[in-house]
Image (cartoon, rainbow, N blue to C red; front, side, top):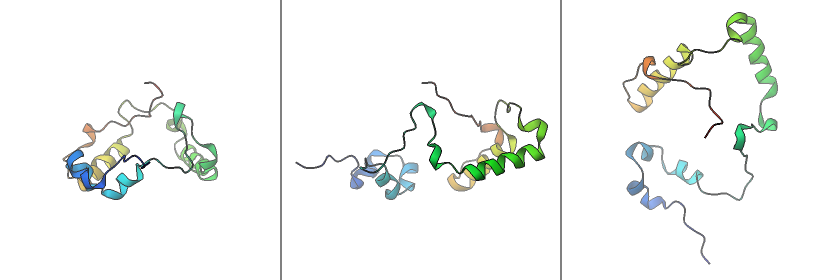
Length: 113
């Protein structure tokens, strides 16, 4: 019995957008089902052993030391302006999109369907 074909590399041009094709066949090959270990992101729970605990602790201390009052407040509705500027700039460079930070919204994610 032959193994099911999930991604036929020869048909990618027919089934994906031009932007997706730019990513290359290697990215699509990574989407194939694997018999290897799987990290479940169900329920939004991180894989604790894979987190860089010491690095995160150092980063948190640095942010709180520098920005005590602002660091523990809720963020703005649209996300941090420097991050929005960086996303707009990178998207403009890499994807040739004409974006400004006013067109970018950064969310914190959600566990809701």
